[in-house]
Image (cartoon, rainbow, N blue to C red; front, side, top):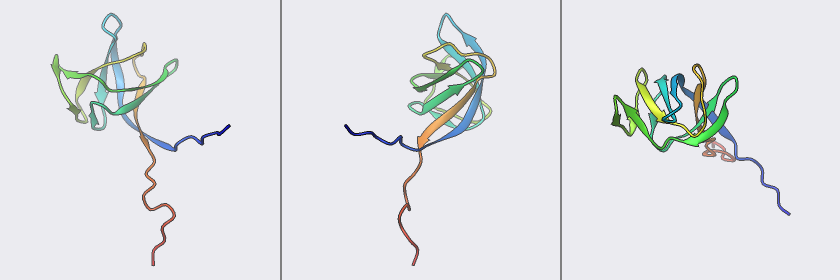
Length: 103
């Protein structure tokens, strides 16, 4: 039986939950860093702790593919979230340069 070592990841804060519409499964998020549809995120708060990919993102009921810092966007979420929960982009740690030496 093989055991796999976890892949090292880095998490960068990209926003904060400002509202949650439970009947829609949508979170209002104030962005503090750029995000794109398809990014893998980690939602973390007092009682929230889950990961998901950004599948749908909107501004003023218009679908967008990219959000910028300072924007307030709506994200469809897979679990209940709460105001002040933080959102982090999850990315594998780059292995570029690992094991290489400068001459």
